[in-house]
Length: 402
Image 1: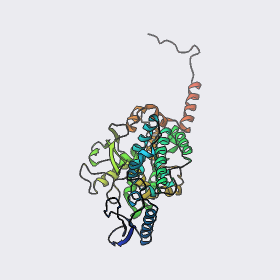
Image 2: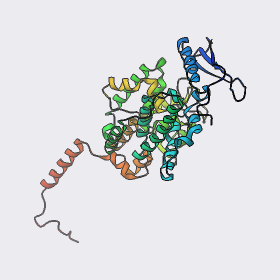
Image 3: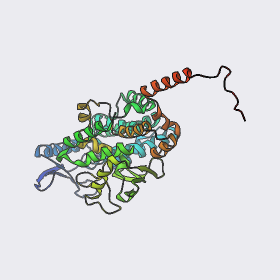
Image 4: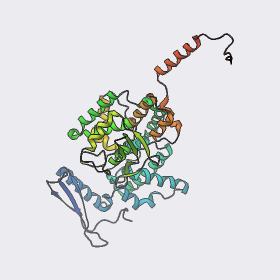
């Protein structure tokens, strides 16, 4: 089994650093060793932005090799390592427990962390993964099972000597989950108050991004005005938009998957139609004019033309710092969707129409956006007062004469 600790290597691991000035990460660290079972001389390499980091990586590879850990094991991604040690990690589990554990591994852990080497996974990285699952609406049991299998895999990495401690043993996520549940009971409380606040947010995110990339602001304006998920915005193609009727047919979403981002169907598994309001049409026109005239071209991409995701938007714009500076500490990327649905509800969009725009499976979910604000409650009281004060016949309603 490739993930297991083997016997000490017969030949010491040797390393060198190559400087490649034309690369974004110019220092390539490489280690070579002799495989005692085959006699072959494999190698592993990794790129860094400075020489000290490259040499530290070589030192780590040599130190682990001296303790019996093979370099190929150390450089595996979590997906590769998990596959190699899964039989060890799940030993002793009953079938009724194993099935949800493996489902969590496939559907949550691998898409989120599978591309990262176990030695590069931190407590913070696991925290962000769990927060992402909470934001995606995963149930408490789904998150618990996903974490449980991750803990088992990383515990095997500890036993193999790949890592010193298990970063998957995180705490506090249950509190975050309860808070998210409470917020979903009143999604209106998560919405931005008005378009001016949304525009300020978009401008501030652009200003904090590298190169002040305007596309990040466009994504924010488009997501809020259409009440769409960030993944659906990322999956939008030019051909999905009809500029004659200004309707967008939401057909797909771009989400994390093993090996990177991938396109799949919408969360509701069916297409829906969303209106594009006047305030966002200039954004759409400009995006279509930025070399994206082809129908299959993406309407929104990153500054280098790559696919976007909610984590990409967060990191590229320093989202957490920006929203805190604007006094919107509570705001998450998904709250742009809450904003759009709240605005539509307040504008008088009928609940059955709002449900179609949102793509909700149950109308009870849509009804959460219809909670009246204080002005509506006051108006209701005034209407009742006016009704009670109106003159009426003492005998009640009288039949009309024929």
